[in-house]
Image (cartoon, rainbow, N blue to C red; front, side, top):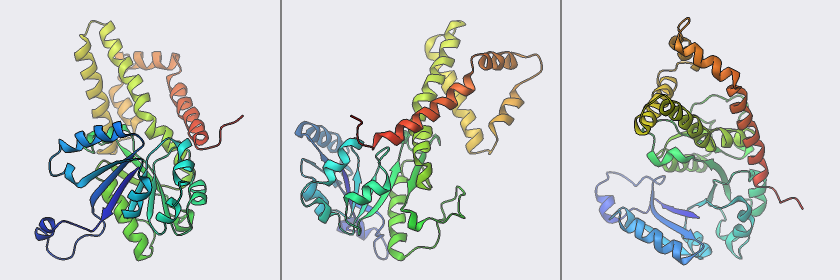
Length: 301
């Protein structure tokens, strides 16, 4: 469980700013883990960061005390453990009026709202593995969704401009974006799309790595050294993704531009079609979506 306190900047930090502090900027952090050995490892990790790491407290099995001191709580555990953690004595009351951000696959807003008080503000988010390299590669999609009472069915574009909200909700959105924009792109989505996005973006890096590894294997088969084959394959996928994200090109346009009559590209494409690559990848997304929707549900006996 990760926790942030907002707007309580240190005197030194305040002296570098003009005007009032930004209440949406987290300045203190608490990490709660289940075991002391995990806490020891995290303390060593954060300690190596110097002054930046000093802003992080690490505790083992002290969820209630940490939540009581927090303004924002990130719930990061196995989906099956969410009910147990939120059911700890006093935790529901400690979350009263606070922002609770869940990154649990398959655990719905309805489930989360049933486990906390009505005044707790529940958000779902789903980062993926490429956030470790931040937004520089631009292959990262973060999914955020808010309770349906705030949604507007007329707004389904990809912009970060939600409908007009109350000042408190606007602050909550600002906090969410401050936290997650530091590691990638953010998008607000209706919850009905969440499991599909979990499969596409959350599981997507694993699927992309299968394709990446297969491309490198093909290069090795044709005589390229392994390191060079892997680098070429990775750079090819990275460059193509940038053409889509930054240049706005449709994948079919890029494919057609590379494919010349009677050339090597069309020969390779036909081999992929023979192997039903398109349908296999699409089915992988379908199956992963169905599995994501099952993760937060009670186990079948």
